[in-house]
Image (cartoon, rainbow, N blue to C red; front, top):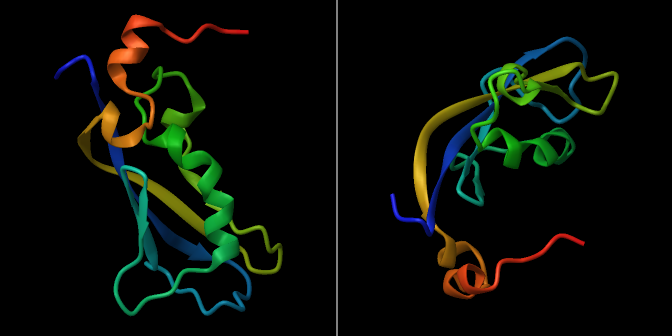
Length: 120
């Protein structure tokens, strides 16, 4: 891998169980996917926005390989924010993909190498 490339896991986020009453008509097995920076949903399917939004803040960290003791490596379940719903989702890591820095950032890699950003 070149020094301007990095790996991310592709993720599948799926409904594992529903322990209450889901008013969004979600079903066990419903899922969405994260590949690179793009979310997709299977054709003809829906996914509850509120359940999805509870997952989104965790997904960039789940895409990366962390220290083995980091909780991001061991924990993979998220619940819907609706307490009456009881919907539990699971994040599964699929294969990895290699991304090029310049394909995902407006700041050219060569300029970063010459003048690395400093911390405040």
